[in-house]
Image 1 (cartoon, rainbow, N blue to C red):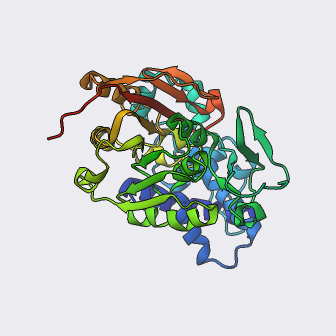
Image 2 (image 1 turned 45 degrees about the vertical axis):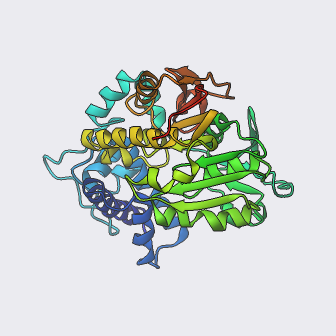
Length: 397
């Protein structure tokens, strides 16, 4: 492919990504994989270049662009080489027409910018939200030593975390094949520490997904005790068992839940858990570095639904914690409606619970918990709070 043809391919991809963002379709990574699956003529350098062009345009546009061409024109206004591709030659994009308007450059949609401002995330912090994310892995102490990994650097404060060079093919590493490492952002590793997992405990990972935090908990527990990993997404939860086998984890049981019927399905765990970890569904504002088009998908109505779901899941998790046990609430969001606001609402309505201050290797106190941000901590963005049940008894109905 010529450089101009790569730019046109990125425009075509952006059209698909924009349409999917408007309709709730597939994520950008999925669309990119599908695009090249049907274009075998594109070599690895072509695929990499087109992907980088598409993501550069996505990161540049805060509001959802009118079209892929408008997004690429915005990028062309900041990159003379890209601007030179708008000539119609070499299968490239047509010349810029009179009156053509590029997409508006910015970090977020206007309403989201206001919500982030109100949550204490200023423009400098917002810019970091759409920067490129590093590649972190967690060393799995249940397996043998990882051995040297070219270019790996330790993450300060996290003895089990390594940061790998961007673009590393982790799946090809021997340490990954043997289960000695797991891909996991440093921020995700840090917030999991709030569970204070220890050998012999009984823990519920209520929104386990594919099990990244579940496996980290199991390693901290020395693979002794019991973890119940639950989720309502069958496809994601199904990925946990093979990951656990590769990691040498044998204390995890999975359970698929029906939305709005979680309490019924978890009745056998009522008042039994030393800790319940709720990595709740959220807006994902803290993960925009990895999924920058996600900020085009979020709407005030969707945010409201997420907040309602989070509150419901907290109530489900609360009923599972034994006296003296803990509920750890996590969201990869920097919006107070999902983080500090949820914590405050829970504490106001729950006199037999108290927030326990956290001592984590990164982050800053925020409300009743701790917040990590890309700008301050060089991790994904998270809010985490740890609540301890202080009442001696609970009346069971």
